[in-house]
Length: 43
Image 1: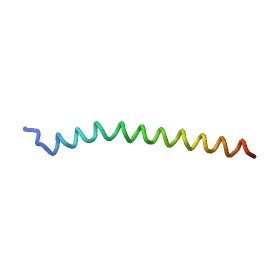
Image 2: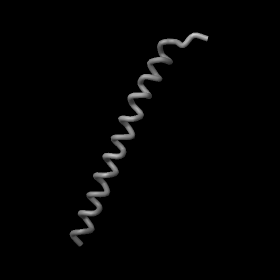
Image 3: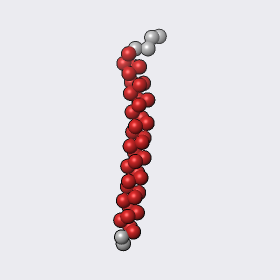
Image 4: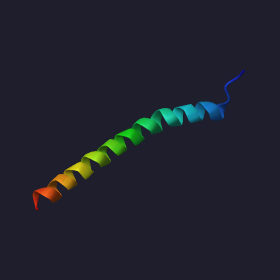
């Protein structure tokens, strides 16, 4: 069974895209937590 080019491309895309997506979600969570903390600190 030969691995075709689209399959290799998909594997490469996922190996790059998934860590970037995880990093983006982590950054978003940090910003939202900081925003919520600042918002409640003003109360």
